[in-house]
Length: 378
Ligand code: ADP
Ligand code: MG
Image (tube, rainbow, N blue to C red; front, side, top):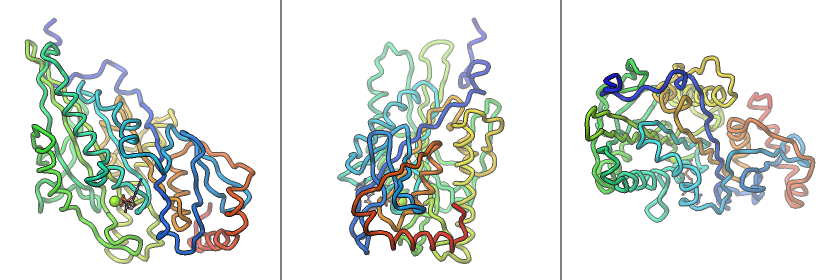
């Protein structure tokens, strides 16, 4: 009986730690934007149903490549719908001492920040999730027997450095692991929040501290991974006063575009290399988790995956929202993002649309030459 009087976070039963769980993969296509398509070529990607989409095959305009995902959100999907289908279902787990992570992946301009943050008219995943965590806690009645406390940290990984966004000017922080295999960052600001407006009070000014630099692709292109951590600690009101901690990571990843194309040089090239290291490692980790044959998951190979080690795979609940854009100028970045996200694809022998088959012989040819000039094999 006294064996369970453990004040630390409950350790999962034997074997449960070793189990790797899949990362659910959702793809969100943002609406077509005329101003992103100066040549008026139309979209090169389109949805088929709630799990499938297709993109024109640059090797052969008479073919499309069809991809299957856990969820496909088409261009008409609202912010609320993305939240309800991809994020809301995992939130109750963090009130039970389990961990979860949500990522927005994809090229700059494809809608990662729109999905995660949104705008004041169209709130994204972050404000919806924080509101939902507060209402889940409020809905717990007294008989539940636990007291809940909610806190937040906000950090970014920039050039493989871990920076505290709630404490501007702070130095690179180190990532540690405790004896129960929980990942922690000593010195990282952790603020208790008592309401959604309390959250906004800390979060909004900190968002503005994010390091950004302009590139040819986008003036405020983010070169860093922005990571919001919401922690729910619950404590049993009666003996043995067990305590459980659940962590939710909400991550707006750096752009996945091929930086050889943005004309980056010097410091930017260094940044690009580091960004690629974290994204490259993330792709290996997700791959290794989803292939189900993971012998060694390479969490330690980058800061991002090291930080997420206890909240990605294992007994954690994870979802990756891959954001894509429909215009031709994003073609190869979209193609790469889809290939990263998808484990299966199918070449379909049929035209994309009459219009795009008849018209874009030139664009497709040019895109291929571009691609070959960049020295990429597929
Ligand atoms: P990223 O963060 O991936 O670089 P953004 O979120 O900044 O991309 O999106 C680029 C532009 O497209 C922004 O102006 C954004 O408001 C708009 N946008 C992105 N996704 C959507 C969407 N689903 N609906 C409407 N506008 C969108
Ligand atoms: Mg962004």
